[in-house]
Length: 258
Image (cartoon, rainbow, N blue to C red):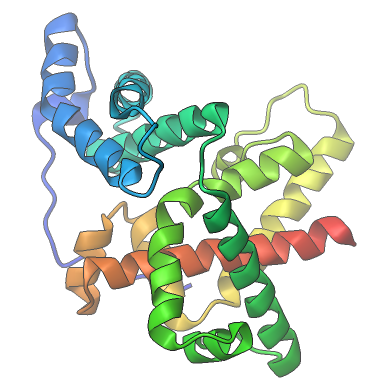
């Protein structure tokens, strides 16, 4: 997988690099990242029915922030902000799943995009281009990109949910290789196989998508920072990330159905 050396220098403040050691530091971090919780909650709420309470999303996101602050490991090569954003979004989406108010139309479109992508790639035996997926779906390229934009908030953590639903194991555990000692050999073998399926799926991605995976998941950059490095808008990088998740979900579907 291509690795790009980030062109930015990220110097963590002592507060973040050492982790929260007392209540004062914890409070300072909560205050610092509270606006991020509100921003992410509002971003998700924009595409939801008006009856969904933004306050409920903010409350769920705040719990995700607290969880991130408590569990952040400064020894990992990732920024606290990146980890917090991941946990906040996860908490918000968990709340929405509990409320069962994710738009069904969006879920349907995601399935259609995945099916179209799979059909094109099986026919051509290579990664599908955006224009080819759009043609397969019978829409123009602008409409396809609009679908990607609407799917990104719902889709962001759905790969984790997808693996949970099929195997009862977390995608985060697969990626971080955190296999409990009491796992039996069969579970260990299947987890290893799943990791190989995902790794093979990443290797099969177009180069640009592999770069996004590398910068986002390995270097801990935000989508905006990745856009600056690649000469793309944050929105375009977000679309690419959404496509990556859908491609990997398609590959996992094949794995579970064989």
